[in-house]
Image (cartoon, rainbow, N blue to C red):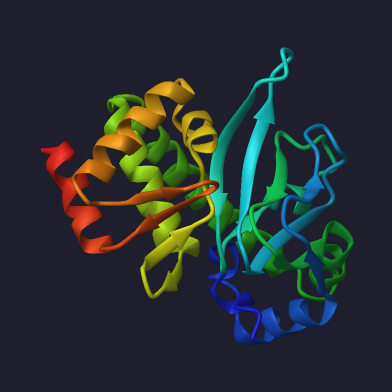
Amino acid sequence: MDGLEKVSIFAKLSKQHVENLRKLAKKEKFNKDTTIFFQDDRSDALYVVISGAVKVFQTADDGKERVLNTLGAGEIFGELGLLDASGRSASVATLEPTEVLTITNEDLRALVKASPEVLWLIVEALCERVRQLSTETLDLSFRDVPYRILRVLITATTKHGQVTDSGTLVSIDAKTLAASVNCGVDQAMRVLRRLGERGLLRVDERHVIVPDVPALTRALEYEES
């Protein structure tokens, strides 16, 4: 199952509308470390992550990369591409082998042509999503670096962590974490080292292994208090 019915911006659609949209959508597979689209590319489609994980990032004029988010199965990116054809505001690349469902602007137009009410239902859901993201971003901006790193780690673990015999493995490294929370790589490494000393995680090249996710969550609650 592709999980299309669980996508937030389609939550207000009827089962029949979702099924009609599913018939128009296409599946694509990407290898690890593959860029799905670049910043400023023409925006013309929404992507739903079926399996795997991706990072959303921006590249500054000096070449530095800032990771805005990491996304796992059931999450979406490029949603504004359903409504306009402006340039992409960020790039998206895979963190591991990933399969996505692609819904183009043309697909949506075909559905709206048959069922005009669909457009307004999607716009309402998009507005709710933007408000939620804005609130979360504002909240994070007032937190210190350890809290922000813990928040990113827990979110990534919950979204696309792979359960192994030694714990939950997440495809993320210090550079990506630093870019996600807007701090230096050395600072991110120090935080990871301290968390490692407390037995909350282990760093393995481009991965973080979390032996006990609830314990990591309790650490975030402690930072929050």
